[in-house]
Image 1 (cartoon, helix red, strand yellow):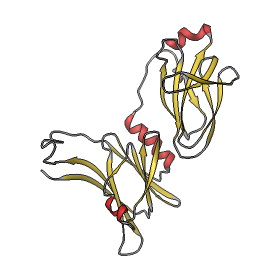
Image 2 (image 1 turned 180 degrees about the horizontal axis):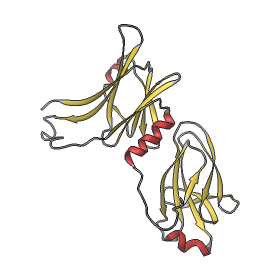
Image 3 (image 1 turned 90 degrees about the vertical axis):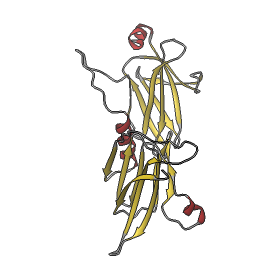
Image 4 (image 1 turned 135 degrees about the vertical axis):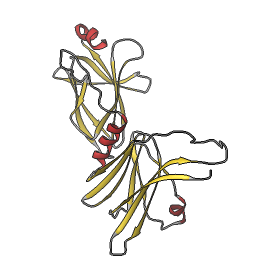
Length: 238
C-alpha cells in the first residue's frame, strides 16, 4: 500500500532531453530541472518507447505494457553524467481504488543500445506487434509497401462500406518532411486521400499501374483509399 514500483535504467549518456512516443509521433521533454515547472514534472506519459541520446549515440527502452516513466540526470564523481530512466510498473494507492494493480502482472521490456529515433520506432512496434508466421504453398506478398522508413503504416483494412476498396492509414514518425512512393501488390484503378470516415477528399495520381507518390509533413497522418481494377477486386477482398 502507498508504494510505487519502478524499474530503473541508469545510462552513461549525457541526454539533455528525452523522447517518448505518443500516438502518431513523439514528444521531447527536458531531463534537467532548471525551472519549477520542470521540477514538478516527475511523471511523464509515453507509449511504446523512450529514447535518450547524446550527439553520436543513443539508447531506447521499449515496452508492451507500461506507459508512465520519469527521467533524471546527475553528474558522476569521475566526470560525465548519468541519465536514469525509470519505468512505472505498479502502484498501490488507497484512493480511489484500494485494490489497484493487485495480482500477477507481466511486462516485456527491451533495451536497444546504439539506437536513433527510427530504431526506437521499429523496435517499439516489434515489441507490441511481433511477427506472425504464415504457412502456405504460395509466397505471401504484402498488399502495400513504402520506400521511406520515416513513414509507418499503422493500418491496412477493407473499407467499411463493403466496396472492396483497401484503406491504408500511415503517418510520418520522425518529425520531418517525407517524400515516398506507395506500391501495391495489385493493379490500381484509382487512389484518393480520405478523411477519418473513409470519405474521399481528393484524387491521387496512379503511376505504373500500382504506384502512388506521396508527400507528408512532420507527424502528418494520411488515410488513403485504394481501388483495385475490376478483375482483381475479388482477390484483394479475400
